[in-house]
Length: 398
Image 1 (cartoon, one colour):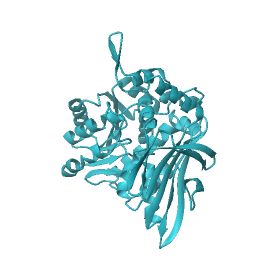
Image 2: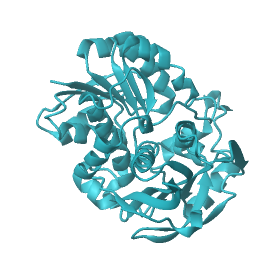
Image 3: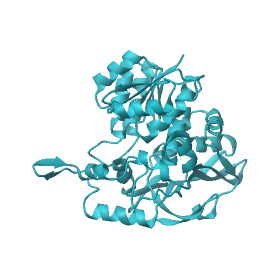
Image 4: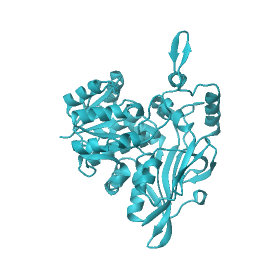
């Protein structure tokens, strides 16, 4: 029976563990590990049925992590820890001879810059070891790449224009909170914007470009052009793209809080000395902000994430939209988390399933859009993230 090691016990780790435990015909023994074992124990108790074993590990310590992997001997490691730890977990997987999957690309602690190049550099090592590494198997990145691959396979000869649109129309009732790790979230959304056009990257000031976009069953929401990691792999894997952009919604209250946080230096990743101690401001901020894993109980509304695509098929121009809407309330009822964690965790489970079924099993390092999208799309409908498609796009992103 297949064995899986999950690393990370936050909101996404909670969802991944619940969903993996719910598919016993694919996943046998489950081990959940993190720096704080008590968090793992609480998740295991919530899952119940003695389905999940737990362990303590430091995901930044390669020898310690390698020893854990060797002792458990999983078929795949699902990394839902911090992006800082991607490379050490990949190193441990290589050392122990186990395949790997994550949901977010590597980001160094001392520089707010995420890119796939550092992980792509592992391709030959994984290929030579006969192991598979699946990168970015959350929703965005993740499902958005699968959506694009599905469109390319079934509806387009060439994709020319891609807009990934991400709306959180939910309300958690807090004055300010982030929907995933505050340190990573704030670093991501305060960077300069970046999009692909005519064979090069175009840079913008943070939140400089914005416009209202219409989201299915939600309506118009002000959406901001930001850089998001899947653009890096999608423009590489779909070379016919003339333009690729990523849009995300932010409320005015959120942006006001974010602006104040930046203006007073609390978003800084540079250490400051306070009473003889070194403190990183953004990490102190993380400690006082609401824990994203605790937001689900009072969260209402839904997310809407999708791809709006234009290109040609049989010489004719065509437009296509594919998306998922996910209810915060439904996510909480099932897993005790909000929809942002749910939409990341479910695809991670499906990606691990694809590997264990031999459908996404190929030596080397790959992004999700490089695999066959069809079986993954089928499982989204079966495991809580049903998708819809429209053979048009809204004109705002044209």
